[in-house]
Image 1: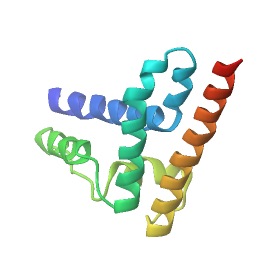
Image 2: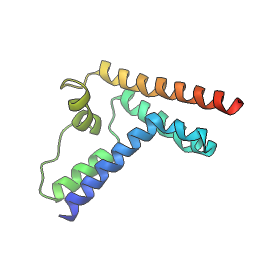
Image 3: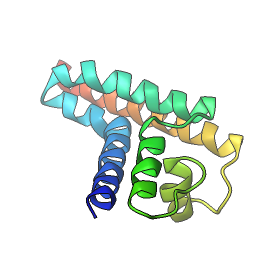
Image 4: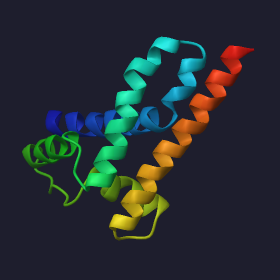
Length: 120
């Protein structure tokens, strides 16, 4: 039970990280120091997508699932949890590049908005 709970908590943490990587720049409007944490997080998220790698949280979640008696899943977090909801099944290099580009474009737009608001 505790391993399953830990794996579920890790899924929530992983999801929160993804939201932060994509939209965390908005927090810089009110707390500029957040950029020091957010920019590396966004770069990491884009790199993981472009490189085709897996976040280190994915094997940890799979290990916790195995310890809980569940069957670990193949692939990465995005492929397992997000793509079935957002995209058709099947993670391709093109989809990964699109996701990385989406992270970068969203953050460029957010930081442009933050800088413009700060200048006023």
